[in-house]
Amino acid sequence: MDKEKDMNQEKTQEEMVKEAVEEAKKAAAEPAEDEEERVGAEEQAESEEDSDTAGDSGEETEGVEAEPADSEGASGEKKSRFFGKKNKKDKKDEKIEELTDKLTRQMAEFDNFRKRTEKEKSQMYEIGAKDIIDKILPVVDNFERGLGAVTEEEKENPFVQGMDKVYKQLMTTLEGVGVKPIEAVGQEFNPDFHNAVMHEENEEFGENMITEEFQKGYMYRDSVVRHSMVKVAN
Image (cartoon, rainbow, N blue to C red; front, side, top):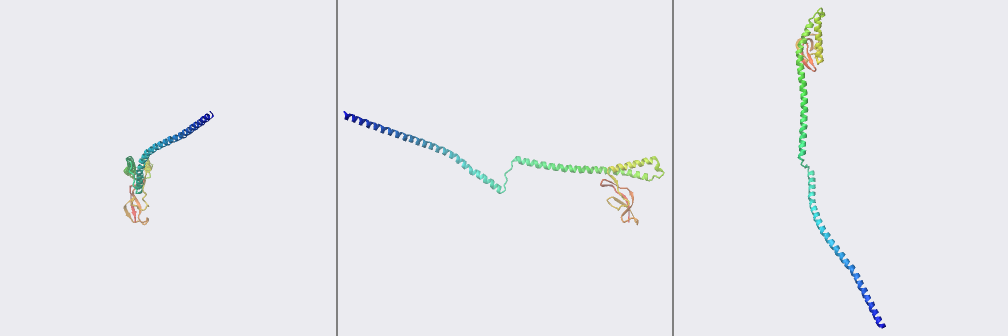
């Protein structure tokens, strides 16, 4: 009986050992399967990543293929700048430059026209004024001849005094608009202002000096309206 118990106990111990070994094997096998599954998952992820990378590399390859064109464009621009070539202007900019140049020319032409018109107007005014003054001067000459023929007794006559006042007022008005008589007697002859109608030998006067005035000359501003008619000595 004791031997059977011992044998049963030994069998029980052996079974327990076997069960323990089996459990240990199972426990050891499970991590290996997990590791295989993890490795398989990593390999699958790597394969998917490689496929994505291949697609991306294709897109990047297209981008890389475009770079030489850009580099060629940049090199072309450098070459054009190096050889002094200018980029073609926009039509709108060309039109703006054309209109600006046209406007500048028209403004310059208008300014020249304005200056020319003002000069012509001034000349026309001066010509008209000289023409009127030239027609008034004979009236002045008649006043001077008439007043010069008046005797001392007749100077007290109211009519003579009235004519003298009219003459003085007329001369004041002419002087106010820029008319003045040309100096003659005692001055050196100047063909720009004097008209010599007679010559004489006179030791009292120097050479080419005016001794007598037959008709008084007048100037309007800086131009001669009528030359003085004079006698020149020596």
